[in-house]
Image (cartoon, rainbow, N blue to C red; front, side, top):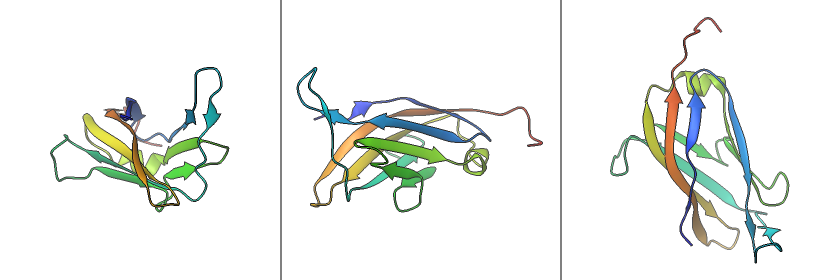
Length: 121
């Protein structure tokens, strides 16, 4: 299955906290995917072929949370982290590694950053 295309919009200096529920099955009978014991990583790069990593989200660094409820994938980037970002746009993808070692590329797309005006907070 190809990764779902999900554009992300970040605001510089603001907390980004968003989630998606991953479901599978026939239309009308979907069930949440069991993410128990899974790990996740997402890398943000200036462009697809770039070696430069602008930002990494993972279950290991506390920026991705899995299975807070069945099938839930949550990205959380602190206001301090978004304040340090300077790109206008970039690309990312999200890999999920299940407890059995199998991996899937779940999401991918572009991310845009709206620069802040207020700097005193």
